[in-house]
Length: 250
Ligand code: SF4
Image (tube, rainbow, N blue to C red):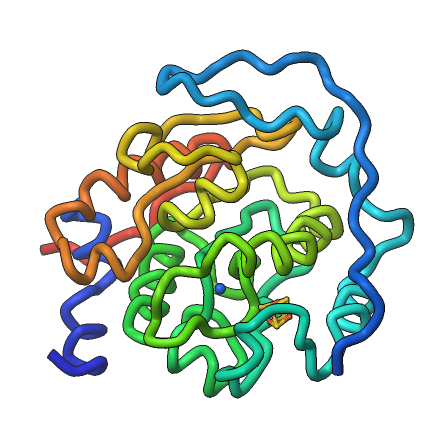
């Protein structure tokens, strides 16, 4: 199935119905100790590195400063070797909802924008099914350069690049962070547990509502999982007071 036919098959209604020059070291957030968070039903405890995710933000930080710190030709990790573009993120810098994926794919690497390939089209349809537009939310990834052969980002790459993601989240201060797939979920929750253990469960991520669901690329391979993702997105909608997009009468 090519991208066009795949996109056509994954309509919002179908989703609803079936159901993201080396410079100085990056500025990293300072942290303060928080009260011990309670474990989730899956036994996962959100990382207590700060009283609030946003308390850890750098004073007067901005996307412009983050971009400047990353630089136009970052070589901090080995992902720089095969990338075409650094994929920073896209969307509303004051969004209530942020989607965090694992890393850019081929299409994203070429265009310099996250989630623009087949999985990106499905994500857009999911967002629209929630009654939002793609430009209403913010979309980014754990790492900003494409892992070769579309492999998952490796631990050293995540460790090197993810401080920039945390700074972006600190600038946005969203009401909800939704991790797409195991890589972003495990990175933000600092767990090695599989996403199926805690998908759809709310976490208090240092004062911010956090939920993880399956990656749209996974849904392209496993359409039956759309119903589970839709349940997760409905939880987000309820928290944000969103009404689902109206479907045409049958
Ligand atoms: Fe730099 Fe991040 Fe790209 Fe690695 S993934 S080269 S840290 S921008």
